[in-house]
Length: 188
Image (cartoon, rainbow, N blue to C red; front, side):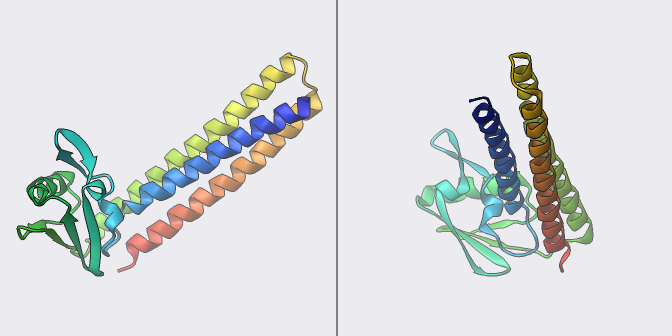
């Protein structure tokens, strides 16, 4: 029973670490890397009948070629609010309203903008690592509490070693994900 409690606690910690990785991957998808990527509009909110709604929920987004995107709203009256929301988001490109849809030409990134995006990617990576370390801390503190309640010291030490191994693995994975995104951003 004691070992099962320990394993369940470690599994919860590992799940939190995996969630941090998933969140990081989703966040990095929204970074513009010089080519058309519909995910850059995932966090752009448009006023939809008084409710802030993400652009992908009110329109379809296509990439007819690597340097442009077309946002086709499901309601024609949403074209104006979508253009305004994209402009307000300050993503580095200007939407073109042709009355029925919104065309976005993706300009090449400047060197300064690339470096800024890399800095943001590293910041997102640090946030993910912090979440991973917090998950490790939660597991270790729970085991210290279990130890006070009578859990064997060997089980606690083994659990700490195991969660540290997972922490190292997931931290390394964060570094790999961020490095890959930086390479993508810096590729001209």
